[in-house]
Image (cartoon, rainbow, N blue to C red; front, side, top):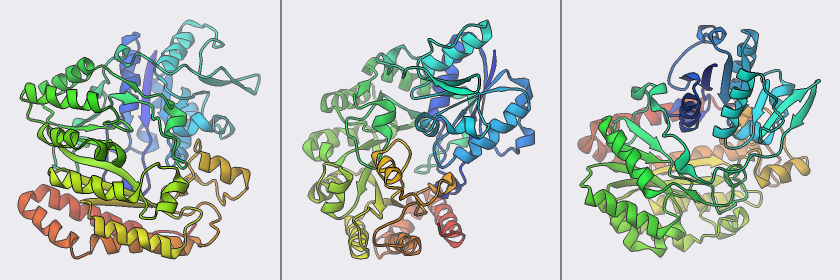
Length: 460
């Protein structure tokens, strides 16, 4: 079969700031389909600017669309257009996994794949190609005589080494320049699943609480291949890349032993880092440049309500530790937890300024489908909208006990302006100009984009 895989565009804040990462999930799906003998093309509308009429849906037997919640409305538009052109449409990703009925209700899909999709999608395409039944395909939702049928959940893939490497050739390499050094960046994942179940997050519900890893040999082989293709910058998008001390140490030692001149970024947790300062030191020696940390709040009560299982002091220690070894910190904070007042949110803003991560991301608490937060607010009928465009971290989409949408959005603006226009950030940005004009130019573009977004922000 001829298959087109599509990544919908984002119309939110981060989509406008150019944080474009290769859609790794689609690259894995494409590689799996090709290995099964199917013809595959892909289209990332985040980096390839095409109108709906310019997409040749009619050339394909099946169109696969991946969708998270903020982009789900775009996915619906794409699905309807593909169906109108005569293609069969399958949707997957976070949003269709947890609200699998919605693509059918909105006339945008013929099938939904829930959870990890490599095995289910290949089975579906094979079945459609050969006219076989669908009853045995785990994780598949479809219609029978107008009624929705859900097959049993898919098994999580235990042997990740059995998957082919993602097919990055499906996407334009120059569309994914690193926002940190201006070079083409290759996105990798070395593990799936997250043993933490933060209240606002759906990751462990999608990929499981059990942490599943690729072998070190598999990861190193992919890195070696990518270097032969000219990549020297890498972003590991594992939920917690450093979860295993031994695995991280072995990884760094292998990079040093091979004398690889690479730079890389990863996601971690503050409690993991402060427990292993020697690991952080080795990460820096092995090329780690930035670590992304979900700091979330400068108030311990809020952290406890989020069920983060970290402390304020661990946050301070982790940031100091990373800075000591020359690793930049990208910290994210969530404002508007259900118990928070203005005073508590401003405490978080002050904390972020004192902590001084190189980059700070602030967003409003957003109940994404699949999270326990979404389930609670839906049960209590406190959601104020199901316009998924507003589930972007910039809008309040539920009734907050203490703060209005306008008040929270003003606090969000205040957080960004007070952090990025602080006495420490402006000189740092000027310093970046002399160290790396490319990075400084990108910093200016992000500031301009952010100002445009906030100027046009609508109140939920």
